[in-house]
Image (tube, rainbow, N blue to C red; front, side, top):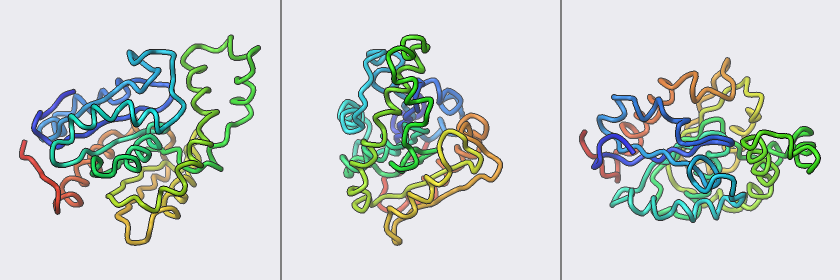
Length: 236
């Protein structure tokens, strides 16, 4: 946790595998830290959060994070920034705790249950004869990937109830998360919803690390231009 303790709260959610350190460059960004209270977590089963015991249920992960959300929100609600599999967790948290979540920034998000079906190598890695040979990080990631389509299907009926600003950043050359996940988000939210989709023609899945300035600017744009009404902004 870094930045202004009384500033706007932002919670970063990493993908799979990963840890809070995926957002290290953002936590050390002096521009962000001058006005924002930034927190990055190890999702359940990763880093120092009961490593190895992953929770495949996004609703259960959201529940585990709820006490932290309660501490951070104060009167404002918090902004969630999710990368890859951390993005559907962010969406799930907004669905389950709408009064607590002010906005979403989704980077290379896994959202569409049809597009996120396991690939041949995920199915192969799920066999016991193969899984024991995988590095632990990849084995944990595969467990999450195998369960993800069913988790996303459960969320489909809940999308219509979302009522908050959403920024979605997607590389058109993403080989891990299909770029059409952005189209899915556009289809699922209502036309009067505040959805901003940024498609990057030459970017892949790792835009989070390769173009941090762009994502930083999108976070700041969210605060400066889309959360000024009805949101308790704090000066740095």
